Picture 1: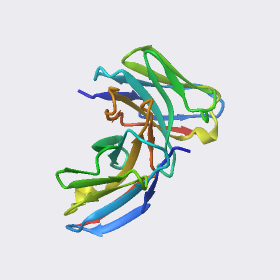
Picture 2: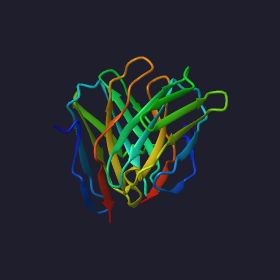
Picture 3: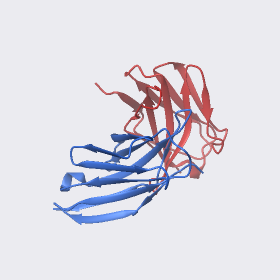
Picture 4: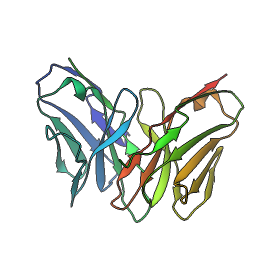
Length: 114
Length: 110
């Protein structure tokens, strides 16, 4: 049983389109994250979210918005896609306890904007 | 930026040799973690070291942490071809935000 699953695995689309990537975790974790990994493998945190708080990386354009229908899901919606949005997007989850916790990652969604 | 930096960016060794990679960071931390990423896959947690610990072992992995120098190292002993992957350090501060380093690409030649 996959712990953190995200769909689709590959997404090819045109500039200007709107797209969503879905993420689900079955670990019962209280916090979920979205990361962007560029072509140089640089991992940048975009959002973290638990049932109390959404923390947004200030460098993330407001075209990106997380949507959480429930504790086990955190979807990523992207409006007006740009060429620079091409990257691999990773969803992750963790159980936040004092001073500990590890991230569990999905397999990634490779977005290509043409 | 709270991102860490890893050194070297790329490392190529023969099977059986040891591999050492380093991570430097800028802010105070609760703990530091190391992750592995195989090509085309998600990251997998390897080991966690708390800010009050100086060294930790797990199998063939040894991690050290020097909070005065804001640096950590990961040693993989007796490397295997299957260890070929990218390795990332992640710092965890208050608020449980995980900030990753730039990664070291390790190639182990059979």
